[in-house]
Image (tube, rainbow, N blue to C red):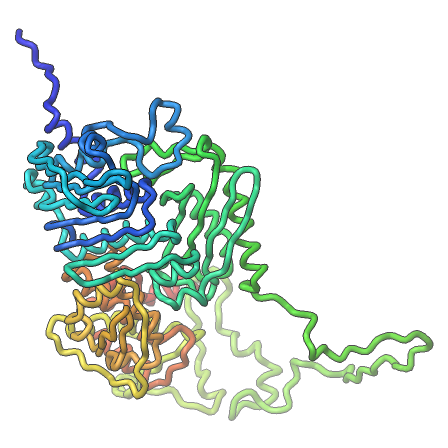
Length: 612
């Protein structure tokens, strides 16, 4: 039998490795920008065409490479960052495996122009599908200039599974934001299809956060700083009042590298326990500085999952540090006893007391069971004293027969209604409101209990979905337009789905620089927090919770309905409750909200009788 195990060719092995390292255009941007940072660049330009599918260009002013180093950098496992296995546990650079450039060159057409400061001429390399197609000396600036064209051109199956341009651009911006947040000392620019998206100068951390996510963040963040023998923790954490259901900016960095760490996330959220509503999120930007020998960054191809040797020791330090920041900067409500208007409290001066004990007057012969007037009209006081006679015909316990009182109405001065007359009597429907949340009314099958907020959400959701489908939403003009600030990712979402926002009733005008003027809102949404509503709707797509099309329209309509619905605790009149119940029961699916919560429940007569 012939041998069947063979060594794969290099170009096939490179394509397999590219599947782990280069998943989408955002992966290319991440690897190239990190290489520029490792080269000591202080200014980096990122230029994207068609969300990276056509071209990705990264230009830096780093130290550059010689002709030999440029050629070697595209070989698999060729790196200048490590020399032996022990260096993996003492890393001070972003990249170290030597797989990035080889993987990119295996699935794209790459052109590299680079020059060192000591050289008069640089070198230009062109590679396509892991094969060198040209090398020549050229005149170029110091640093490196990478152009990656036609990503996945030779792997059609991978290219076919790329998402829309908007989605891929959002992924690129997300990777770019992770890098610029940890390097505020480096200047960055970002262009997409010739349009400038970011222009970030050198800044401190707080300024960099505001430049990326909008200047509204400046008033929402508190400084965090803790230093122990295990780790140094610095950064910014959000104020409790800025919590939101979706779209919170949450970032962890360790030794200048972005990481995902659910364990540390729970530590941060524990510090906000009882300070923010359940299910809401808070923004934070937290940076860890630890001994490189105490972490392992080589457990995942994208290096976003990092293993800590002392994570159980860092957890309480992080939670305590966040709590200290909240308390130190008065983010937690406290009682201030050092106010100017102090309460007027008498001070005991000694001596004999001049105050006497107050006297209490009461009627010792008072009997709460005696009544001066009859309980009902037509009943005499003697009837109350002889109340036992009312139950003289009731059988003892266990008889199983109902009471057959001869005529209770006669004792009250009232006459019973005949059965035919009772059937023809028209009784007005009565609605009762319980604790400002539930509406109780009788129906043919029993007693119906309705959650008024969820009922209104169900009604408004169906109305907004119809408006989105028919493009028939009407806008309620604002007397004083509101100016809102959005991040580049959120601006991209607004521009892509501006027709959907217009269809539902929003009148938005792009003022440039991430600012939008809200000139009109959907009819019926008066009084809602427009800022929170729009950011909540936009963040659904930015976070990947909603895909473009029907799913995004569903989330937009649901989010708007939840903001505009009747709040819990609002008192309603009989006409308002009747209108709400009537509109609810006219819907095809009134029993549940669009997100699966129960709107109403009917308590049957049998269930009611079992209670007694």
